[in-house]
Image (cartoon, rainbow, N blue to C red; front, side):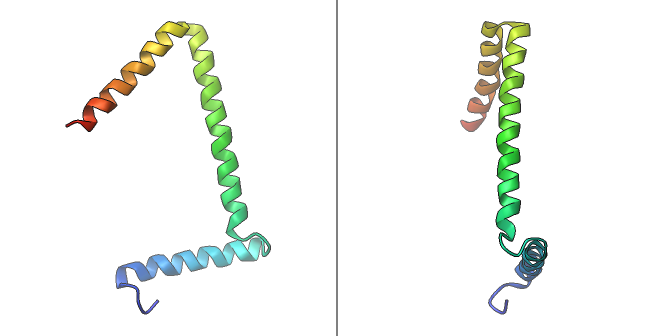
Length: 82
């Protein structure tokens, strides 16, 4: 802690408290369990998003869906050049 700047000390203490609380809840896995839960939730959310896009394509047609994706990507790419 001594080597940290004053601005980073609070963040470091908060991190230590978070880890201590995680250890109290689960002394074997500590933060690993929380990270695993977040990763599982992310995978589920990605799967849900894929299925939603697939379902959307059935309503608007696959060609229109593909075109809408291209239109979303194009502005993002043009913004990178500016």
